[in-house]
Amino acid sequence: MLTLEDISRLRIGFMDIAVVETAAMDDEYQYGEFDSKTNTIKINPNVSDLDKINAFLHEIIHAILYERGVAAEGGMFDDREKDEEFLVNTLSNGLTQVLRDNPKVLTVLNLLRNTQK
Image (cartoon, rainbow, N blue to C red):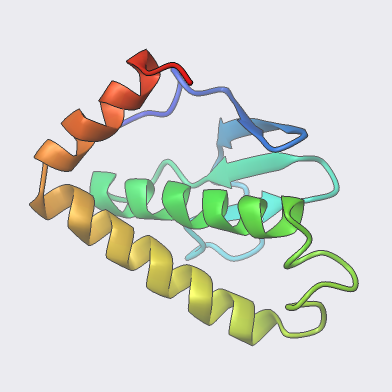
């Protein structure tokens, strides 16, 4: 079973975001959540590895949209939660599929760690 213990913090823009695995969600069927008030991504540990990866990408995308002002107060998705959720689902499902079906993409992306501007 995949755990996210090696990723306890993420830096997204100016924000430091804690990453925790917890089954304590508002909905027992919820796979993850980004809390902009506490800068925390929560992932449900009781889901399959593929669902956990997808939920992790999903919540990262929510955090990016929030940090960039797109999903924050006054942003494009302010008061349009259904539209934001549709976009985030589309992107996270697509990225999960691309990364699962094309493992060499991860190899190429890993090269980013070794590049300098």
